[in-house]
Length: 320
Length: 214
Image (tube, rainbow over all chains, first blue to last red; front, side, top):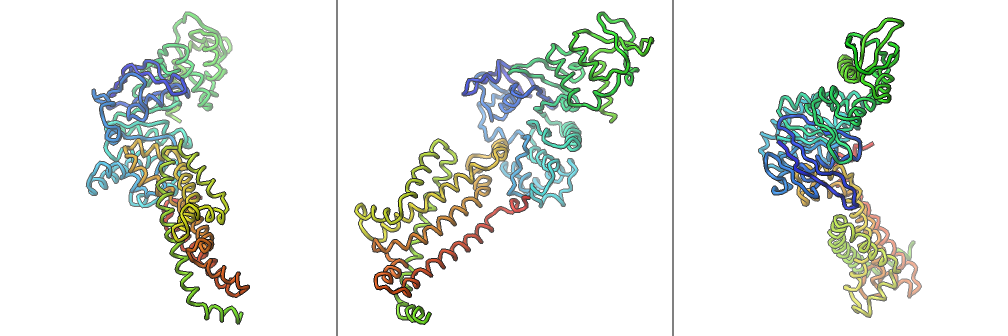
């Protein structure tokens, strides 16, 4: 379990990156911290392994204040995956992934066994890849190695700093799923920083939405979709996401007829069934109304609101 | 050509002795130069606020004409091998220092962050990550310094420290072109030889994974 207790961070240039943030991350969960760039999400995460030091407040890992633990020792017990991968180019894959076990003084047998297991888990044949060098691998393969390297020392906690945002969409999707599977299988606590709401909705158990150094909302993916606490969160999971997922946004409302509600809603606007999901979501946000009454010709098809659309999007994506 | 070979034969003692002196001077100066510049380079790469002034000072030394530097040192230290060595060391510093600094500071920051995040100590980072990755740069600096030192060591003769400059100087004074050549050629040869040897070492020192780039 990781606890942040009244964390503030003021950088030397005076920017206030975090304002009195308190947060508890339960063990064995995948928690995504999400927000626009500059919201303090990465700074917050880096405080867990002391790459950033809070100006005030304290971070606890398993009820132990991290400031009371030696930074180097602490980091050996926490896996770390970064966006730009950061494999050591002059070391073979084997040396890269066995670095933490070596720092921890594991026996060669134990290290090898562990590495073989993890390599197979991310779908890279150890016999083929261990002797290669990072620059011989594709971006997706490199980040798989990055994940293996972070897990090699068998840490209870793994920190991931926008780990897949630099990858191509196919590799990204695969790695998201693999990460989720690994997390379930190995029962790790994963703190996952991202700016991609789709990614968060897809893999996280809990999502922490941040803005301007503060937490806006904490909730499960379903909670966020169904009950966004304010306009910002609503916008972030609505329009923001649609902008990323163009393929879904371009679908027409009538494709989602089975999800429509039939009961009368308090405030609504009448729209045609052939408008796109993107248009519908933007309309809901702009007019600040709860739902749309969808009509095809004279026939009323039913009511639709933002959470219905967003859930529908999520299931559609999974089918794709 | 005939006279050149005859000169080499008749003066072989002088040439041989000067040759060895030359190697000795260059080698010691380089060894000490590396001994100073390498740790200093690592130091300024870590404490970057010192980088500008320290590299600046060595750069200023570099701009002093070599003959003037030798002349300048004589009243301070007197003549002899020591004076020559000091001057040569001063010249060897800048290329090694600057390349060590550049080599370490241009390493991709994500690599360093990954290492730190994994729990490597500063010295582990230096030995296992920073130094090997900067090594090709450092070797290039040492090569530059070597060629420079071998060349400038010919001036050691003016402070009475010997070297192949002796042969050249004597040749010049006695209008003996063959003797000048007998001094100059080995200098060029030495520089090329050292350069080739170091190039070979540099290639060997380049970490294997870096060769696959591109």
